[in-house]
Length: 416
Image (cartoon, rainbow, N blue to C red; front, side):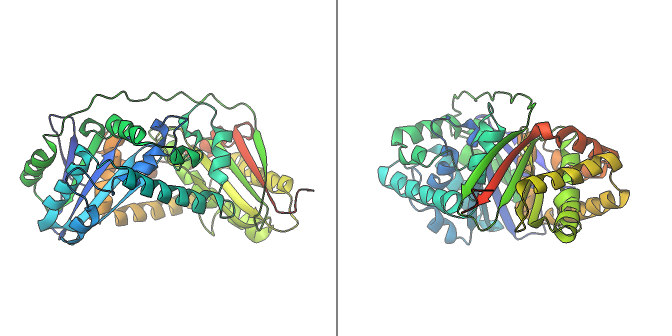
């Protein structure tokens, strides 16, 4: 159980407090309710660009990292389809430094062309290193627009094309900042060795005077139900042929979400999973195979991906994958499989709940989902899942008509 207190400042900033008197550390986690799904389709990658810009100096603090290092602190951030999350870990007696630094860059960044040009170069290089240069790096650039025709999940967090970042101007980034980086569009979590009264005082002192901002929260078009299989062939300089299949599933708060998560473990969660045992170990269809879900807040995807063994065609691999799925739907799931996954999942969650940083993030995400106490009910939701729930999830979502399939052909394999 993660005990917490919750209050809201007059400017709309939601504040969550969790006290852990046994820790010598304190974490300030600031979640902004803006991700890649909030971007202009013609100016993508901005949410991720801002993750970098936020470390380039604020209105009063030119060297964010150096100020933090002087008090023994560490920090980082990440961007997803749904949110951008910043976190600072410091010795508990130095937590006010974290309040000062994070509030100053919420107030305003130091908008200057040199910082923008530097961070644009960093992001473009990251785009190339992660999505263009490595083998199979462009999977998400190919799969997402195949799977999504309306919803803004149809481009990855890095953006559709690095030209969108190359052409970003100071006016563009100012508009994005003042459109989303506001106290009334953020969730602040303080976790660690700090009491509620001090948290309230510091939150009011450093964040209370930042004015709320008027912004229009984007509305997201509903993705129409998929009624037929979609495919795309990719010819690339990759070492092995590969196949990637994406199936539409439910949103994060849907009752099926936890069954879908456990379904991916049964199919591809390690060496005891069905895909591994049947298609890699026994039939040697794949040299690597995996299954997971994207975990998005809005309806996401279950992904099955694998590298084909030499001599195996995409048609054979796909047929074998669906045979494993269909056997699960027909014969059901063994209670021993479910109990094993439940035990592993509960152990992982309980272990992660020990650290103040993990608890801070968990409280932030749960608040974003709409109920902070969801941080305490996650294990219960997994434990409630039955074999029948998992079987039904497979039947509902893992249908050929709901499949988006990338066929990767290794270089010089175009004649297949």
